[in-house]
Image 1 (cartoon, rainbow, N blue to C red):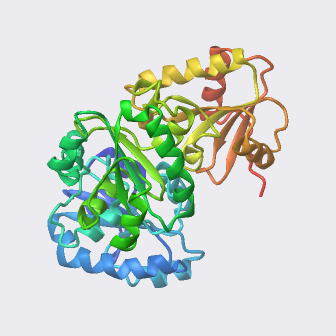
Image 2 (cartoon, one colour):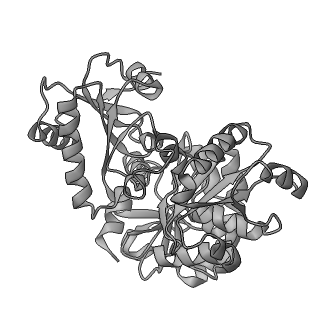
Length: 404
């Protein structure tokens, strides 16, 4: 058993036969599911019996163990809830380990199901969706598709005939529906940008979430681009999953080979309507304006320059580039996200939550129960920024709490 698993779960786990050493409980397992749940949570109470059935009928025999990590409010609630579960559990009194696990896997809500390999590395954080789509465990242990596999899946679901109509250009998948007010506001803007030059850079395909074909037909009349046929509902779902669509309107942009350039095409095209910086400028960037896309704030440690000058912004961007290079130029692999905090709605909200009214460098750590840290240096340099990050990691900077 990998040392990482012992580091994650401590020395012992609770089993139906009492406390046992972690190395004994998880020995020779092919996958470990970390199940964040609580009895007081209605969605958890709905999911737990389904997961238990899948575990006992399929997953356990395939070599999977599940570790229940409780968000219950007291030992008695934990005991009652765990009595319904057929797997092992992190002992309830290991609250520090529970908090570390929640932070490590960026658990924002429950139920959450993270699946690890035998060495303790993450297979997928979307375990709940994975098992619900595969209750018999035919795809166990649910490794996500590689970029090449995902690209093939995307092109296969668009269909060869429709792909041929894009003329070898990059493809923008526009997920939208007539019943959605933000979509009806965005569609005419996108149509205008398309006619004024965007069409020279990419072809757009409408992927409909309309509720019936008549609505689809009426809505598509307003669009000057292509569309996935409405009756391809399974293809629509597969494309939504592959592009990580959480809500509409959503605009994902692909290379001609199906690999993803960005799933945040909506903000990219809004700031660059003619795609003059495309494709390089549309790739995920290591340094961004927090007002454009604040979604990482809830999931990552984020370093934000509130206000500041062009010189201080250049310093922070330089540090961001260092982290980007160290992460193999993969933004998602960066342990810290970097932002400018120019005037805007998100910046003002951060100022209210932190109480920081001056131009300051602030580290937000919302996954750590709403913590934040302030750099008091009057002038920024790369050395100052890196020292601040080092001091935060070493707990040498005062941890402050976001206001409510």
